[in-house]
Length: 282
Image (cartoon, rainbow, N blue to C red):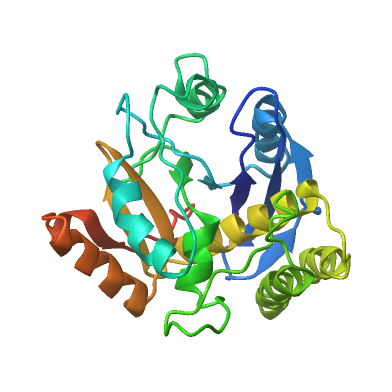
């Protein structure tokens, strides 16, 4: 009896690839590894999840996806992005707005929609139903929640610049910083194979974009672990206009609630604690 956890740093468009990482969460609270992160496009990710489900017959499957799963607005940004942009910008980062005018990502023929349709659509974190739950998450917000930022003149610190495609900002030190923290988190959970994979790419002074995709898939997987264990997580946004799930942190919650007040949003609606253990078989 087990639950399948998946982190998917998505491909975003039909012509790109992302990465997927998975593991099995056993009923006794321990984990079983099922392979290193792998490069996939959307159809390949769906087939991999279905293969894992057929192989392990999990009680439930939770997928933490790094891509918006609910996009109803034709222009501009979603409310969740407007809220999250505040703590991200405080740490010198930016949030890409999601809207349906971006045809390749969120138009009617975007690959995210058939992927979601195959697994029951975007799940409601406060009341998930069915056996497969796909939630939107955001690795950048996870870095903030886990306090894996770097020291800076600002008390909030700064986000690491670890995208190897952005050569003007990428630094090896920042890459190693993120890899070190993520590898340690998997080591702490007694997942040595995944930790070794992360440590190995961390030693590469010239990582590829596919390495970063795999690393971000592991960050998504850490959020899935927290949710699966029944630990408190933050839900930012709502099921009508879009949301993100992230590891719980008091300081991040406070910043998000302040942003809600500044933008005349009710914090009790837009920033909520979700805590739900996955169902167990009898």
